[in-house]
Image 1 (cartoon, helix red, strand yellow):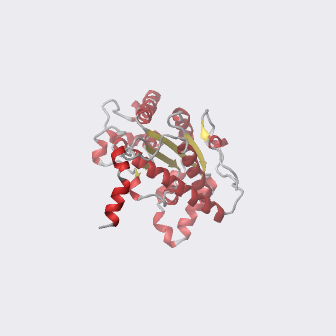
Image 2 (cartoon, helix red, strand yellow):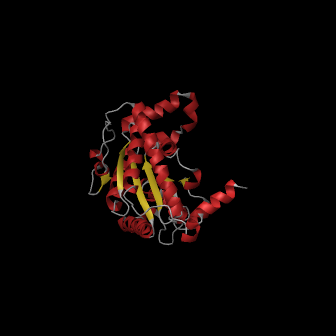
Image 3 (cartoon, rainbow, N blue to C red):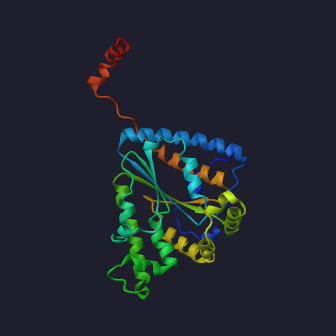
Length: 292
């Protein structure tokens, strides 16, 4: 099976989204890829257990992609080996009334993982520079003092919002959160196939909405917004990774391998040792239990 190298997927210089691959050949069949994913997932779970005991780092995974990119199933398959106490996933939908009474980053701040845990943002704070940029009328629900109409949403508004997002990520990174941002890069043809599958398979009909077709018509606008957002916000402390998403098993494995290969470089993540007094009396404690 083909080796995965982080730098092949990390975005560390300006990109043109049309030049990013949506598929990759791992030189293995689906069964082999799934087997390798289980191994990496178990290795990640071991790291998470150490992180939980260590208590000094958190991990935040931000997952973005077009409709049908496979976000939900990826989260399920990559983290199925995890202890449930060690991971929390948040799926950010349309803001609630309460959330709209705060700034757009508030609901993401309060969902951040505590030190020792993995957090997954399924759709993220980037919706606020993607969906709202394609549909600027959505911003009117935020009731911002300086936005009286869509005419007030100019380039300066978006530049300020990107600066706020960069500052948000820098702040949490400086305080012990290891940030990964994954763009599940799906081709338009593959999205068409997946939408048709939802329509043709009765058990998948519930996933379909006519809104999906309306959003698909805006494909080019979304691609432009993704490209701009990625170029503005892929930083050393919070890098973006392009995950070719046309093949779901391959996408899951690549993402998991990037996580594992990055986290294993944190050599300071170790289980804490018992205090000297407790360590010195381990044999005595075992004897007490064995002779109850």
